[in-house]
Amino acid sequence: MSPRPQKTNHNTSWLQRILETIWYQGGSGAYLLKPLEALYRLLARLDKHFSLNKQVNHFVPVIVVGNISVGGTGKTPLVIYLAHLLKEAGYRPGIITRGYGGSASHWPLLVEADGDASLYGDEPVLMAQRSGVPVVAGPDRNADVDALLQPGNIDIVISDDGLQHYRLKRDIEIVVIDGERGLGNEYCLPAGPLREPKSRLASCDFVIFNEPEPHSELSMQLQATLIRRLNSDLKQPLSDWKGRHIHAVTGIGNPLRFFNMLEESGLMVTRHSFPDHHAFSQADVDFADEIPVVMTEKDAVKCRGFAKDNHWFVPVTAIVTSAFAENLLARINEIKSDKQ
Image: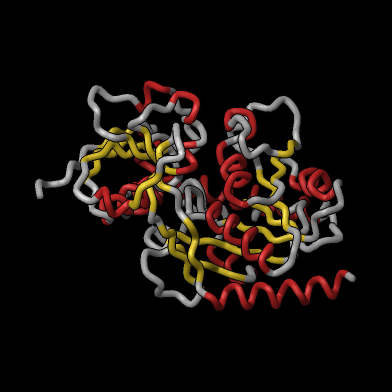
């Protein structure tokens, strides 16, 4: 087999690339940003203090799935997993989410599974498609909960992100950590990638590591077995694409995870990375050849309107250790008893 193409088109900003070098590769410069980190932590503590004093209680259990670092850690697949887990356990879950990147003029909004990602945001549409439960998007988490509960058929709320949205009173906190990148240099922004200090993890109910192989007690893997065409229902085993040359295009928080997954599946990858939540245009995914273009499912919801036959995406499913499901359902039963 010929060597795999390793070309990468960096459409991310130069500042972001410098910061990620400092955060994850031990690049020099973190000490220069320490004064700004101190200011960030002070402002974050003040915001948390005032937000906790404005918390709103809700009559159903609220589960927050978030992280303490910037960038993608795998929250969205875990939220979808939770929705299916809770439905199978007899609950009627719903999801609230920020709607980042959405252009709607008013919020909150009930997300339509076949809706326009430019209106709602990419992640809300993806979750509405994959979870099979109601999804409400909007920047005010408490307003989102009220809108979700209004029809009266939801008995448990899953918040996609929102760990630092302290005005939302939560009953269970689940943190996802990238098992490969970890917490970087463990500094807070901008000297490091952390939104909150590492010590914050001690107060969370569950800390799950998204890692290629299950090494942690609470471990999650993103399983990819199929590749699907954007403009039709055609799907094929991903294993059938071993040895094929592709353009891999993505705008997610940690593009390396996607690129590595494809390469480990035996595909020959030319990499094209864009900023997280990038608003893709046709020009972004068209190249001067007939080589297939492969993207994540999150990116695909923004590209269906102009997709061609050579545009494909790889859906992933979260696989979580059984101990997590058992402990989570037991904790929910306790909370529901307390709320009754």
